[in-house]
Length: 256
Length: 315
Image 1 (cartoon, rainbow over the protein chains, first blue to last red):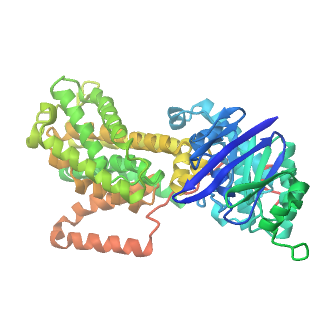
Image 2 (image 1 turned 180 degrees about the vertical axis):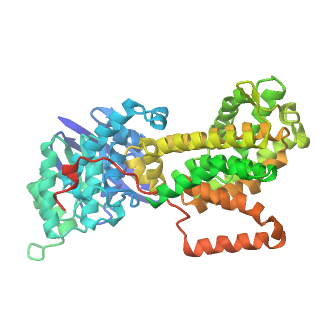
Image 3 (image 1 turned 90 degrees about the horizontal axis):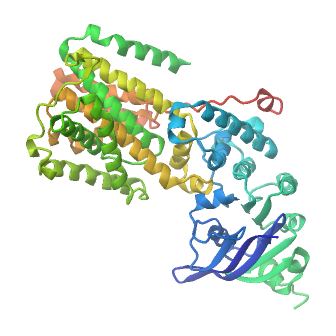
């Protein structure tokens, strides 16, 4: 079953065509990798899906509904959560509060209930805190719940962003270079974490440069170069595609 | 812990202050209370959500005039005008903020300066023939509570500080909830907040209107205390002082109270040295910027009751 469909997506910045007529599908319960050299337009595709950019052309459908150009917060509420390439935590809020921010869109207490702390609001708040502690536990940060987001180590900040995204009950999780800045040990932990997220029934779309990670976790790959789609299909096929090798992995002298 | 002791002492002092004050000082303390109420309402948008509003006096003015008009023209008692005055200010804020709320930091600040000037000039020009032009509105009646007419200094003192205390409790509740957290997220990083599913524009507008609503209620109390209101009471420099008080406070309500005493109480204390007054004030501001750039009392992190098992063990 298709969860996300991107059709003929084009995004132009001034004179630069950042994404040019890109189409792909993401099937439910799969892990899909978006690869390509720096500047290929990967993050731009992500930003179009999450509503941060409005594409010049093309349609993005999530669970059959058109989400093109919808406000980012509404897209999150529909079930698409993301992390950022350059970590964007709330540095002066605690780890738990960062995750609670992700839970925000699932909470219903209105403004008066918040002001007066009605019994319903208290119950909801208590459940939210428990749920968010579970998410911290899930990524292995529960012991740091009271630490400020900005005070965590780099790899931990990446994990905290994932916990924050998971707290919003996503069906599709979009990870923008989750292993960026991680050491080998942390990357290995991330591979294991991604498979655990998938077991929860969350579909994952990720950008990553670490090809070992990509090959370990992704069933399907989509390769971009200069904003255009050059290959897509199952991971092995795309990796061995000569265009992808030329564009992304570099020219192999012996073959040419 | 230290802060808790300090707040209890401060609350105690505020409770008994009128017993030791002559009418003049009681009156000063009433004004300080009104400014406290205004600064606390500005703190919701400026201190919590980082919305740079330097036109808070505009909403204060709308509330004061709404109350004055309802009282003098429609003969409503002042206490009944408080809520409509707040609503008038809140709706006015919503209407002017909707097109500009997406502006960032200093750009928004410049526009809000424009708003406070527009309101003042509109009041001078007697809009709708209701505001009495440059002379303002006279003969606003005193409030009465359970048949007791409030007109003495100490009565106003307890009225103003009572309203302030209730407001602080409500704002505290807001701060400790998803609403308060959402505002803090927006202040920290609005793109990340939007990416987490927080409706940034909605929350900014809510904070803006809420702050304006409270300023409008403060305006109603002010109108009944002064009996006469005129456009010149709601000028730009009031807005700047409120803005500076909130920035200086660091964002906690206790900090706001302290900085309000510094900004609006200290000048009265220093009146005897009137020549040197502004100089001392300026030096104090400079000292703050150098040694305490985070403000007097930044809010302490919120505490959460977390199941013990999760908290311990692993570390």
